[in-house]
Length: 301
Image (cartoon, rainbow, N blue to C red; front, side, top):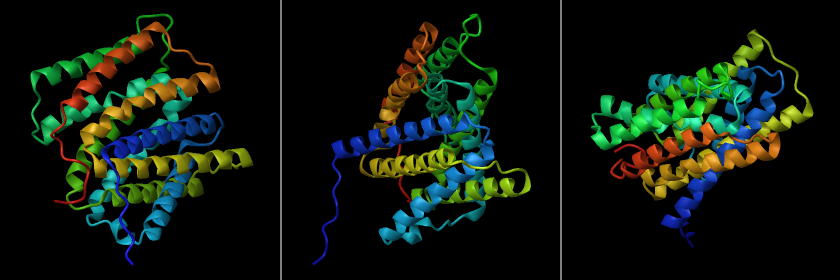
């Protein structure tokens, strides 16, 4: 007797989206906790990539879908994976210098940068209302950072790392929409994990590898596991509803991050941070809602 396929409803897909974004916040929280040690950033991302690739490989094997992990365009996969690696290293650096709340406010520039890159490289067009939303969003970033104030909550090293994160992530997302014509989403994630692990482990062997304690090992494992769980939930979500629908729930990360930032580090956002967050959230949500015609993240056409 053949087992009936598991059906995910629209509401279930939204649940997976929220779960995925929450797991990613837990991964970032683990990165921030482990990052308080003297562990090099490349060592942290080496374990992140290794655990993520191992989890995704095991998950594919259990489902009998190992073939979906195979890359078809190796050169492009390597280049895209390098963007992922750069993003992950800068996430580690940024979280050493910024609160979780400010980190999420800054990285929420990504939807605006993606909209700009899509208009330039994918010829998707940029209506004036969306352009105004992008300008408002970038204005929100300036308000959140408030460089004119003595109470500026941004560390310039963290801010610079965040900007590199946004650049790498946004380029990655726009390019991935082209690559998914020939590559599966699982392959993109798995290969990124492998490349990140290989580069990070190579640097550990040739540069320096800091000794690990039991708490650090547990933190590194949690970091990779939460990242892999978030990725898996995200792919289930975008398989059963539109990418535009999923992207609207990306902003739940700010609430979760703000809560964890307060519970663990007792960080409370100031007026400028909250005002900037409101501008960025409004801009991002408008861009997400107006992107209803964007093709969901699926493998090739």
